[in-house]
Length: 139
Image 1 (cartoon, one colour):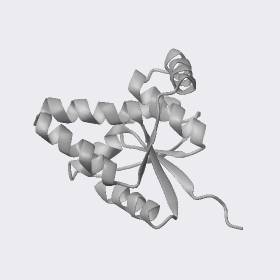
Image 2 (image 1 turned 30 degrees about the vertical axis):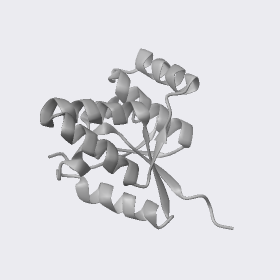
Image 3 (image 1 turned 180 degrees about the vertical axis):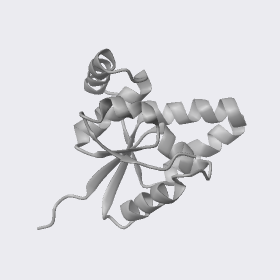
Image 4 (image 1 turned 60 degrees about the vertical axis):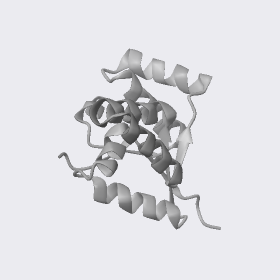
């Protein structure tokens, strides 16, 4: 019997890199391909997806944000809900580490799923003791 596929947790930086054709897109595309083949699993907190949407709408408009919603639903991307447990864990992380509240949800998802957090955001340096982090290139 083989082990369950590894989980990779995308933060907003990683998904924005993928959507925006920025540095790091190649690695995100590799992981999504791996998830399509059942070799790994890729997830993202609903809160982080919301972060991607507000950034997209602010920078590129509502129509593009709606396209991102439709595109994200076609990706092999598991959305981690903002459950009571997720909110409490993110609040605990935010209380103890200097990270944005939305970023605390990415850390909470990585901890809950025992996954690797994929990011290029240097803010996550503060939580590297809590989760395994795979760093993608900075733009």
